Length: 124
Image (cartoon, rainbow, N blue to C red):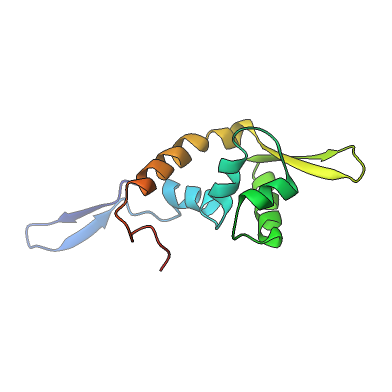
């Protein structure tokens, strides 16, 4: 993320140190920027949550979408899935140690969003 625009003596602009691959911010957004991903991590922050409870906590997201995101988060090592030995069988999810590292900036994002003027945080 050191790309710069330099201007020579003749006023010609050139980019130096251009990003030739996704930068750190883009890579991070690819991991947690998916719809509902941040919300899922946030709702798991206080401890393990069963799937149906999680789907009730996240209004507006379908069970199919939550399942997809949980699988992605599990594949990335951010969420742990545990099958419970109950009848009927249930599954609970928790944030891994790696996933917990995202909670700090998700909280900062939450605070920033809450301070936005009305209308700015609505979907287009």
